[in-house]
Amino acid sequence: SGSIGNRASRMLDFFAGFAESVTTGAVSGTFTAAGAAGSASGTAFSTAVALVSACAESETTSWASAGKKAKNSYLLPYNKQLECARKAINSLESTSITLTARDGVALKGRFYSHQSKKTVVFAHGYRTKPLTNMPVQFALFYNEGFNLLCFDQRAHWESGGSFSGFGILEQYDLMEWVSWVLANTQTEEVLIYGTSMGCVATGFASDKLDSTKVKAIVMDCGYSSVYNQFYKECKAKRM
Picture 1 (cartoon, rainbow, N blue to C red):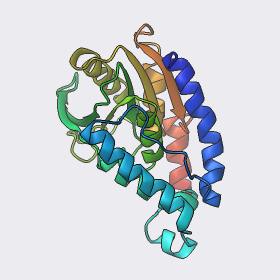
Picture 2 (tube, rainbow, N blue to C red):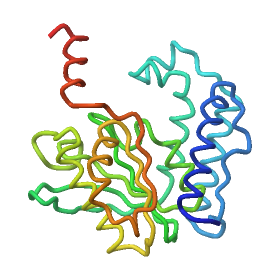
Picture 3 (cartoon, helix red, strand yellow):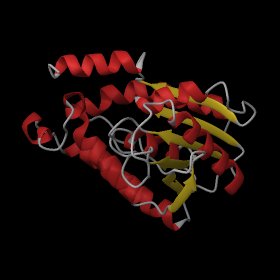
Picture 4 (cartoon, one colour):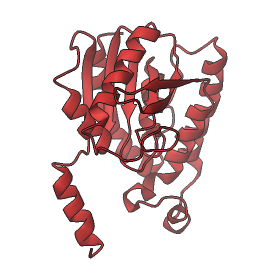
């Protein structure tokens, strides 16, 4: 219950504790498919979510084995939990969506219905996938009763486009996705969760969004400028 802003605040408070609990395996009882009883997808989610807790409780992922699965070192301690959360989300029924961006690029996404009037729109980062580093957030928001919408950024995976705009072009794509979810589902309130390049796109779009519909945004680990980001990467690679 409560407004989307209050529920988002509760989610963010929970993330702080979750980051510590997954490293110790103390996630037992955290995931419950609230409000999902009686639906086929809810039952599947509840079953898969038990796997997340079981993984956290019974398995300790070694750094060596995790290194084979996670390319980014900062994800290593959480690799098992991320993998289990992906399985939970993949157990849900979803609808494939195609829409056309303002410049004609075909964009692909997926909508996970929770029969809710509140939807989280996830915007992923450069050269990542929606479920690469946000599956725990997916699971937690679904557990709180939100619908989920994720999409492939332009020039990524199933979406069209020959190059990325590093957040500049993506801001308009994000606005198209928000418009789609408001026009084609029972959604009345939207929360946007953007990470890395998706965070930057969210920031650029923030002053253009309808605040009567977009009630909250989460801007996770964005960069200060495209130039600084390229400079850092080129310097690291001695280019």
